[in-house]
Structure formats: C-alpha cells, structure tokens
Amino acid sequence: MTKLSVNINKVATLRNARGGNVPDVLKVALDCERFGADGITVHPRPDERHIRRQDVYDLRPLLHTEFNIEGYPSPEFIDLVLKVKPHQVTLVPDSPTQLTSNAGWDTKKNLAFLSEVLEEFKKAGIRTSVFVSTDVEMIEYAAKAGTDRVELYTEPYASGYVKDPEAAVAPFVTAAKAVRSLGLGLNAGHDLSLVNLNYFYKNIPWLDEVSIGHALICDALYLGLERTIREYKNCLCQ
Ligand code: PXP
Image (cartoon, rainbow, N blue to C red; front, side, top):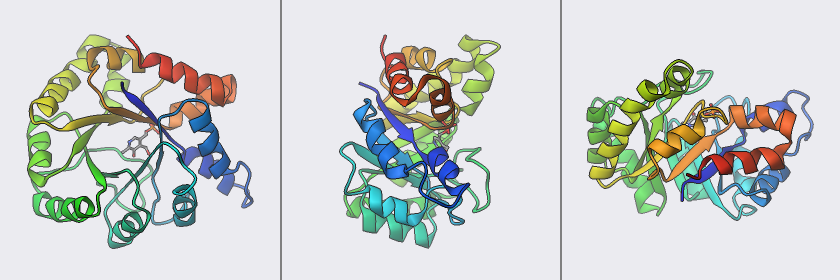
C-alpha cells in the first residue's frame, strides 16, 4: 500500500496570515487522519513562516499515524527532530529563505555531511529519507550515506505530465527501479495532484509514500477536506 502523507504547511500559512489560531493546525491534522490520511508531514523553516517549532512539539503526542518532519538539517532542525522523535525525517537541501524545495541533494558532494546526520537520526531510531532527483548516481550516493529511503522530487514529472505523461514518468520509473535494487524505501513528493497522481502510482506501484500539500489543500477549498483526502487515496489504487 502506498501511504498518503498530508503536508499541512499551507494550513499553517493561512493561520499565520491573521495571527490567531484559525484554522487550527492541530485540529486539521487530526481531521486529515480521521478522513483517511496515513501520515502528516510538516516542514518547519527557520523563519517559521508556516509551521512553527511549537506546532511540531504539539503535534507529536496527538497524531495516530506516521509523522514526517522534513527540512534542511541545520543544528536547530536536528535538535528539534531528535527531541520530537517522529517516525520519519526527510532531509532537503533548502536554503533558509527558499520559497519551496526545488531540487534534490547533491548526495555525492554532501556524502560526508549526510552520512554524519543520517547516523545521528538512525541512532535515535528515526527512519530517514533523503530528497533526490531521478539522477541514479545521486540515488546511489544517498544509499552510500546510509539512508533508509529516498524521496523523489516530482516537480519535473508534474510539469511534464501535462504535455506527455509517458515521457514525464519514464525517468522516475528508471530511478524507482534503481531505488528498489539498492534495497531502499521509496517516497515521492512535490506538485503531485489529483490530475497526475494516479498515473504516477500506476507506473510505480511499489512506492511507499507520497507527501502532498499544495494541490491537496487547494482542492479542499472546492471539494472539502474529507472528500479531497478520499479522492487522493483513490488515486493510490490500480
Ligand atoms: N516533499 C518535499 C521535500 C517538500 O519540500 C514539499 C513541499 O513542502 C513536498 C514534498 C510537498 O509538495 P507540494 O506542496 O507541492 O505537494
């Protein structure tokens, strides 16, 4: 089964726009679970412009499904993750002010750094994932660094899907096969949507997890959260 982890950053962005607690990020996370999400993802950034450190602490004891914290492994981020002990940590190479993740790691160049950080998380019993492109060499170096899983950066798939779905998914199938042959788990995320998710899943049914935020929260404006989550889950079936 491919798990759907709902990224709730956008909900926090909306809350922060007015300074109060509407919408209530914790309640939304619990409702996502109630409506069928298999996990919750947050991406606390140094400027706390969406998810705040306190949200991460508050969510941990409340969630019943898998908690995934993604971010750049700065000393502050590492400290937060080790304190909160989520089920999974996903390392992304974002700079502090970046709008959104827009590339995978250069795992070859960062091999020593990633190996050290991954070791620390593994010692704490936290499953690790490293955000990568479809470049097989980058996937091989992620494996060398000791990660449990990789997360494929799917923006190029999403943008290519509109014109030519088959061509868009081809490098992802090749990469996913490499991931499988290295014995790593496989996640995917970025710009996945109700339009492109099912085709991705059908081509790579051994996916462990997709992490989806922006499109899902936008769809919820029209469909409501419950129906939206149901529809995304339906995309993860043959
Ligand atoms: N995976 C990673 C590593 C991300 O940084 C993000 C965006 O925060 C996502 C998945 C989800 O992307 P989207 O919001 O486009 O669904």
